[in-house]
Length: 191
Image 1 (cartoon, one colour):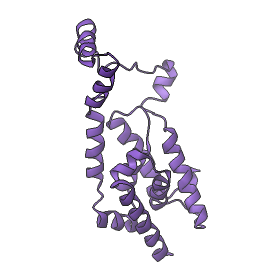
Image 2: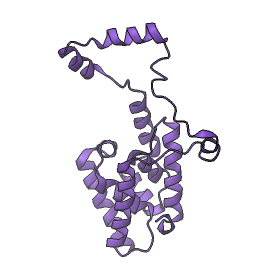
Image 3: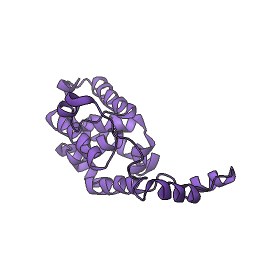
């Protein structure tokens, strides 16, 4: 399928992996593909994104803030408290028994053997929703009888996938719907 991608679309997908790694993600999500698309958008799509004020720096900052947020927040603590679990006491116990860095190393590193570490070093997989967005990009291009999947089609695939993480980054449902209309308009003008 990647042979049908434009050069910029390929660069955007590779960039998504780098961005996911930089943000500490275990998988490449549609939000990382979105960041790659925004960073490497072709000129027509760049104009649409600029007109909407959608920037790579803005998306990267929002993703970094999500990553740095504690995995269990106040709402989670309240829900646990309602069933008799004191989250602060659990955190204190873990810190006391396993050390202050225990929460940072809570997820074990995946080990793949000698060759896996050498050959696949740094590779992280695509999450299901990211794969789906790539498939939907292909469908969008086929529907419009395009031979090549550009960054505009990658964005349309992401929008069609309607992943909540990416929808929020684009201004919610209304913002995503308006952006979709703008991208279709740009493609219609170019045809």
